[in-house]
Length: 76
Image (cartoon, rainbow, N blue to C red; front, side, top):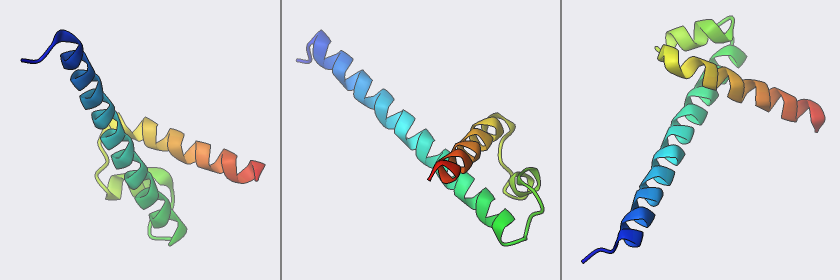
C-alpha cells in the first residue's frame, strides 16, 4: 500500500515531468521560430509564430525565451 509521503513524492515527480515537457515544447517552438526568421522565410517573430500556428498562450513565453537567448549572446 502506498503511503501518504510516497503519494506526495509521486505527485511532485509528475509535476516536474510535466514542467519539463512544457519547457521542451516551448524551446522547440522557439528554435523553429528563430530558424524561420534566420532563413528569411518569415520577416519577423510574429510572422514565424503565425506560420507555425503557435497558440496565443505560448507566444509570450516563446518571446521571453528568444529575448533571453539574445541577452546571453550579447554577454558572451
